[in-house]
Length: 81
Image (cartoon, rainbow, N blue to C red; front, side):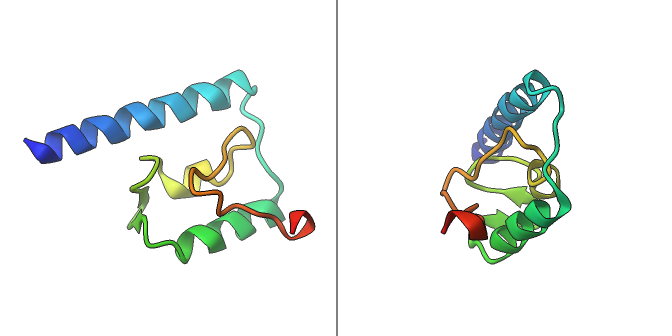
């Protein structure tokens, strides 16, 4: 039963991100930003294969979406440091 709750929670978190993305007119980040985000996600211990265990999103999709941020504040771009 615990697995069902985890999957359901992940699904609803992903729907919330999908809603924000659609409300942002589906805008995507530049390739450089995507690569930086993916590199930071790849180093994160909360990543589980294609999923982020923290926010429940598909990592490779969420990294493209301009409307989204990392819930652990890992997506700090070089020009923001």
